[in-house]
Image (cartoon, rainbow, N blue to C red; front, top):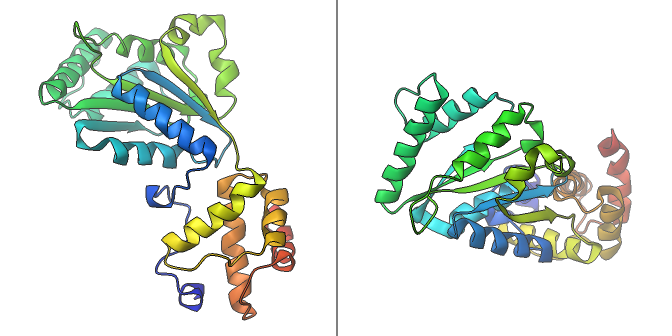
Length: 266
């Protein structure tokens, strides 16, 4: 459909977290640099941001940037109790038969982590959607995992990602011991209006198209309707491309954005 019409080799505004399409705004670039430093130091980082701001894509870009010396282990559904959480980590680390008892599980995980380090591979535990954690003991287990150490270094890095409500959750006095272990708190903000044009052009070019397809008034309208959230921008841009294709438009202006806004607001 619109791909050949606009000369794209692939969809420029797909919802998948492809790091090739990660636009490094000032905030995203700073977040990525800080996360890279913390993970290389094998410390604990907390990354928060609104839904659709690019936290998951950023973690995939971090994985690509750090390379094969680091093994990323993702937990994408952390609505688990403490034992389930540890068993999930054990399975990700290829423990063949995760134990039922917590002390045995921790020993199995430590053995697997140590074996990876012997091969000069640092495991990085990434916990996504951490605001969904309902069992407070899971946060205790995260803290205890940071105790895996040798004399000169930690044995694994941990990145906890979540929506803004994670911040007040972790501000509770209950989690003071965990907060003392955190080396980085970073809140990822939406794009500014002057970054949206760059964002759109960047993704158009990665997809094989040419920049300048969205007019300045269209960009302003997208900002007003999306609040600068990349996932919302992607949805609006995709629908705008479809409308432009349907009416043989060469450019996307604010009129096309206004045409799709009611459908998107639903």
